[in-house]
Length: 188
Image: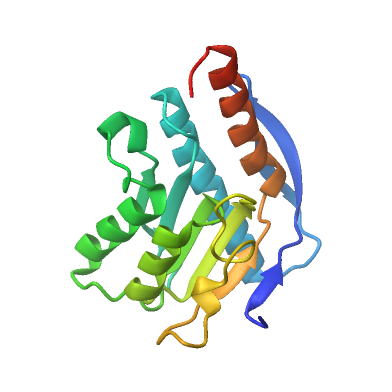
């Protein structure tokens, strides 16, 4: 599992509509790629907030090309579209493939607010993404680090670099607050 690196950046919280969102305050390392990961996660958090605004689970994803330009973004639409496969990662992968004009997304980085599930991790491997950056771990369905290691399984024909824990507290709090409100409203 040498492809997995924890991420260390300090953040300051700001508020958007009563939801804590972080902004980069200072870096504990001056590594340009870590700044890039934090920037991508901020964009993914904005996507998650769009899902939340529409009553869906607040998970967001963005994909950047090798130059760091965001070429695709998406948020969970499972509830909105009544589609169990409408996860942010899958929708972002589809959008990026449309932009590039190829199913192979080599050289690209996916940033997502929650550790990908089995379906999304499989799509990541099939799309040949180079790097996956995620915020909160998923103890119930995480298939990148927590329950499974699909993106680093040596039996598969592709493996990804995994950057975990980028702005994990904010990403996790979005989900915790969403599900707390759902339970209070008597929803599943």
